[in-house]
Length: 270
Length: 257
Ligand SMILES: Nc1ncnc2c1ncn2[C@@H]1O[C@H](COP(=O)(O)OP(=O)(O)O)[C@@H](O)[C@H]1O
Ligand SMILES: [Mg+2]
Image 1 (tube, protein in one colour):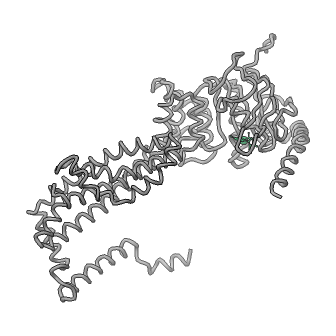
Image 2 (image 1 turned 135 degrees about the horizontal axis):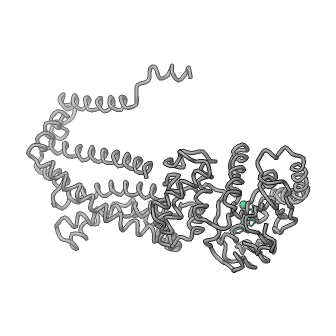
Image 3 (image 1 turned 90 degrees about the vertical axis):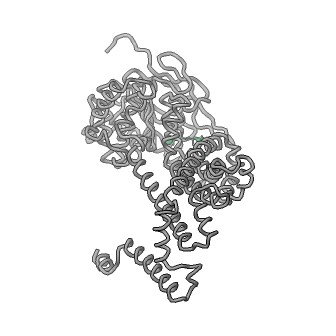
């Protein structure tokens, strides 16, 4: 460990967002301030509709009109940035490209020579455990495999910071656990700075160095929980005592917010 | 399971049913025509239509006429595809125009545009270009509609993937939007090609510039009904085969690219 305090790779300063709609303004995110170190794994957890995706889209550059600032390596950025890669919740593997050609995509766009991009794509497909499936089209693969293609494709862009917006939300529990292990392994091998959005507490505890709990709308960071479980992690730790304590702590905080969300849902319905 | 096997044991395969129905109708017509229930001069029996077919194939110039008609239709469809895809793209990016003109375009796609042929005769004269232009006019609206539909339907997340990879606007179009809307564009081109064939044969029929349409018109003028029907059925069969082949081709292309 470096003794000098490292400058953060990613810094959010008072980032906030109000959507202006014909039906009035929606305050989606209250000012969020946050530093993320190189190699750190951060999870953002909160009830649905609390502004997680909005926050992620601001950091990823898809939303350019917001308050506050986003800095990468101390330099303010706005719009999509070559140091930041995103993996989305929805299916995003290109159906007209094979697994291999999906992963070479960002390198093709960047004009990297064919041999080189195929070599790197094969490495990444190996990393996400898709050896032997290079020539398959997404429609021939399972949902979990398609999401792994999307992850490998984003990694092929070589981002300093990897953003993932509920990438496992559409998957079944077993696939989700195994993919979580895969993501951990990738993160450890590449020392990949990662910010993950999830609404799964166990997943957040299993994967993260820190878990940010967001309040119900408008989203603000209600609490930050340091996950002091030893590294390297895996889904095997989920039975442990400390794991259980952490999950319980987070749930206590989250429960309050989730029930606010539920109440509002009922109010809208009635 | 048991019930399906029981019901399929007595069921005939659909292809066979189709064949039997057609064979039955042809047989019925043969009988009707030979026995005098229908006028054998205006509705000649299938057997004499078949003889007519052999005749126009051998000495009536059916082969040349078909080559000319299909070359013209392909040329027209190519032109229509270029103009149609470009217009579809314009309607897609220019939302206001898209809203204003899409319903008109749909109306245009179902209108008998072949009736505009006198105008084109004046512009291009009595030659192949009038026919090409008429074919292109017929296939542009469906191609434009389908192209717009395809481009409008590209999933936003795919576009966001491109944005996060810092694609240039040109790359965004050629690497994401175009391939994503290709299935719809193909369907448009297929429908357009058929519209082009219809218009081309129609105009050939009306203005005597060669091709299958003119062949049929001349046979009708000579009251040679067996050969005329042979020509008409030939056009229908070839169009159906064409539609079927392009459909297969489309499926094959989309699963292999
Ligand atoms: N483009 C938009 N226009 C208007 N309101 C939006 C838009 N995107 C999100 N919102 C609103 O902002 C709030 C937060 O949404 P989101 O960030 O998607 O939440 P989460 O990802 O936590 O479920 C929601 O109330 C949502 O309705
Ligand atoms: Mg979300």
